[in-house]
Length: 516
Image (cartoon, rainbow, N blue to C red):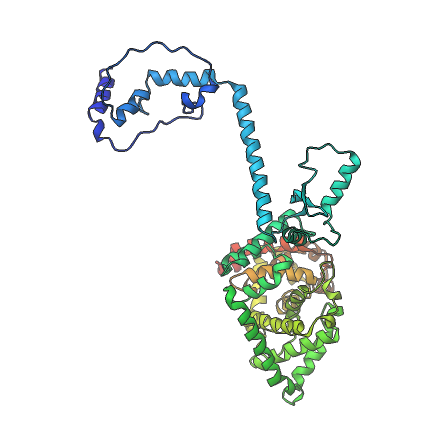
């Protein structure tokens, strides 16, 4: 007891030397209590009379001491105060207050969302997110989910149908912001609309953060921003927004200068064989309905011939022709109707200036891609030879049963995997899946070739059941060269990429793990 008294006297004698202020430390069961703020939550309690004290000058710490005790030496006054808080709180008032806070917070969120939609006219949100409909007289009225007016079942059905279908107006000038919201989100889920908005915000800045754009692109790029995103991630366009238009014009002018300089030599003796091989390979490409349009065939001939002339170390090699297609299809999709399949687009109906821009952009983006894998197409194609060998070693570690099965029936990896590396799986999966796959390839800092190895390994193991069921050489080879992927969609590619990423995480930084 004497020690407690001594400690209090110590604090009072040395109060002027204590820096700062001391705050009470409370637990969850004993919250801080202020009678002035929480008086309505307690019942009236008669306090015992206190002995008047002589007024004197009070220091900061003495003022604190008169109302509370030291946080590490809780006194009787604190016990009494906490007991009051615990025993006399009115539960009904507390619950009512909490419900009001939640309701107010919900209303505030709804108001903020509506204000954002008004301020950002092109903000893409899902149709079900919109809490208002635009009427023919340009007034915004609340939707059925917010209105307090009772409605009949017929009216409810009508409102639900209106909310799921974009509104049409009879010639009136509708608010531009509302129009942009509806157009941007047509056919998109809430998640897709949210991702599209993130892309647009990132691309709208004065200088695009390419690292963030890569992270965002790994799980797929929305169609409305895929074209510009591919151009940025391939290195064709600069990150600085102000420089992009000038770069596009300069590169397009440069490409057509190459056409004037080199294309007339396609029938010369030295170049005739190259041009002839290009003409032979183009009809074998897909989608045939697009590639075989005369306008498109001429565009591809010019792109491939100019690239071969400007890269004499490799020249034109079968397989390079396939690598133009995804770029051309993505860029031309910007001019296709929303519901129209790109292979059905009548390319000849597009303006000449548009076609010239698409042709130049396709050439430069393909060139950027091939710059990173050019050893795949030099003499003897050493890049592909090396990747196929790495694939064989990797599969032997991740699925030894499949690996042994292939060797048991004398199937060499080069017999099926050479095309996988040469065409980047374009002959193995539908074009729509190739484009989704390339979204991720574009986002890989190491480039296409590095991650493609793990995708091929995951792709092979994906068919382990079918492979193990085949018991002869010819059956295995036919299976591996004609895998049943015609029904594949984005979900299948996402699963494939997830498995490839797992393999990369385990083996990329430890190449010796390939070997036993």
